[in-house]
Length: 328
Ligand SMILES: [Zn+2]
Image (cartoon, rainbow, N blue to C red):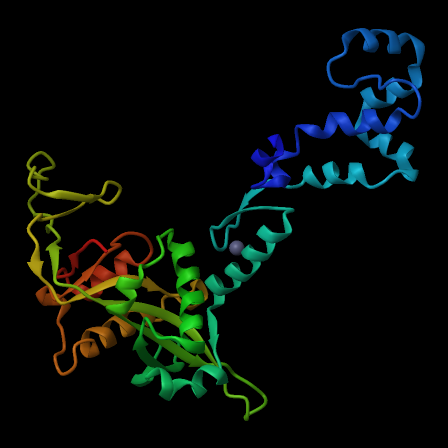
């Protein structure tokens, strides 16, 4: 009943306990010296049976020797001492160190954020069924490697669908974004950049997903207010503008304008950044999202829902100042 409260992160709730297990353990026959709140007994026991109390007072480690015959009760709180919230400097995820579930989650997330996921044989086999199109081949990265860009509906099922689900889960965690709704996925296409994984075995052709852009059909978006070049900080920003992000002094005009393409997610694993991958993916999306009608970000035909963070610079440079903002 009262234990219900503790169910979420059992490991974190336990720390208050450590004082009680030693006392129960040390007391084979004498009434527990320091159990709970019993000031009288405690007072007595200090005089009567010194040895147990010294131990329990000094620290819990010495206690552990005593209970070699006992069950592993105390080990619980020893391992708990190490379970602290840690933020990984590589992937930025906060997790409980020492909690196996958290550690596992972090391990797989960290690898995906750093290196990307794989596009393997299984995915390639389902290509036709899933309607995967290749919209770019021999695409050159800045380091000279070449990759290709594939595109498919974001609500696709099967193996490719579950791969995309995992990928977007990683992206959302990395960008601290909410999961995309089914409605958004139904109106979206995924664009992935794939580069071959070098292999000694030529028969096992595998590729790495080194970037992902989600492109969504939208109807309207808002124009970003261009900072006036001769701005005295006094005259900027007019009250009619909407602040997008307080930390970047980015504002937009509140009037919705017809806009066909939205980009709700843009992600490149950290070890593949600065290779022009995001730009390639955005260009491919603008070119192919509406069949037979290439879109021009410079003319305000593309909008982003999350114009902050690591992708913001890419987005602005690629959009030549014409990129708009929309709400997912
Ligand atoms: Zn990490």
